[in-house]
Length: 126
Length: 126
DNA sequence: AATATAATACGAAAGTTTTCGTAATGCAAG
DNA sequence: CTTGCATTACGAAAACTTTCGTATTATATT
Picture 1 (spheres, rainbow over the protein chains, first blue to last red):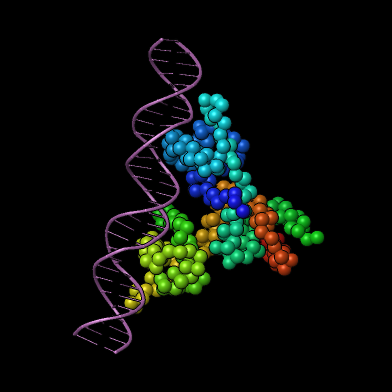
Picture 2: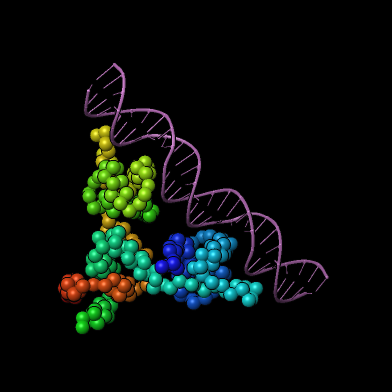
């Protein structure tokens, strides 16, 4: 039990990860381009954060070219799980079903989605 | 559109809120008692944080007695919604059904819970 | 009333995250 | 080759969060 990593990405790190999960890989400029739609920070800020993330092993980068290419080292699913777990324990009294129902309640699902979900649920009963 | 509040409780603030949501109201000592099961910080730390939260309008307090009594000013449901929303947008590509299915996947539900959930789902179809 | 006890108030230090200015470096035109 | 441009490197400031030492105040006990 040695290498269990404990890295909780911070808020801005998560934003960067989201772009990279989406694109698979990207340059700082590309990431920054996307981010600047919703936030208002300079290019070097994004750069610095991504460099720090590389040190933290959240990202890796290919420095073969002058313009470095970054990609995520941590899986989206892992973060999903971790955050869902935290929500379950902290906000839904540790009950998974309450978490799911909470999500159902808060988010409004289309008829389509409901059907999809129902099918999905069927797989759980065997 | 003036008074839309933007308060994201921090990590430790959330821990305190959880105790207060649970108890309804409590003194600093009571909150600190609970917190000290899982963390290892001094009484005055909890006190200070709760005082700050009061300024931020996350809590209110009754100072009638020497020992102040705190209660949450923000609803658990609101935070649930906000965090679920954030997860949906950031981690599930904005799809509510994927969020729900993700939760179903990650958390393991008992047969009981599944039945409960199915009933719950039925209410959404009319 | 004096003392001990328990609570709040205050302010600042320590820790973490976010931000960016400036310098250095490589590349591509001209 | 030299000038201009885009990129990375570096370091530190700014902003925010967490922590706690110490002072002050109120209450209860003797």
